[in-house]
Image 1 (tube, helix red, strand yellow):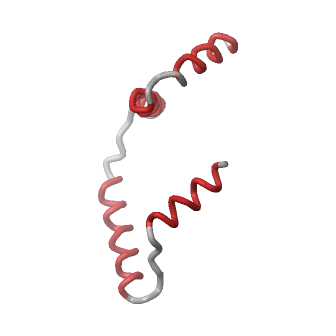
Image 2 (cartoon, rainbow, N blue to C red):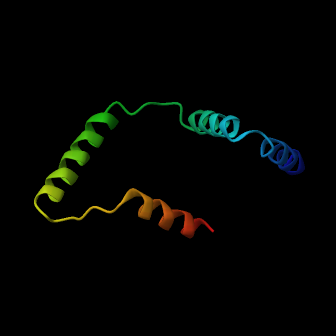
Length: 76
């Protein structure tokens, strides 16, 4: 089975990026098909806390391009 999955993985990597992304999302969803009913409320609460901390000067913002570059550099 291991060689079958490796062969399949090699073939799938040849797909266009959009198709690979769509397939990845589908596979991830298949691992955890349930929904978290509280997720939206929890994220909104967290966003509110972060905004409040930012407005109070307790945190700082960073340009998104800097953050993305840092993430990409860590993935190499």
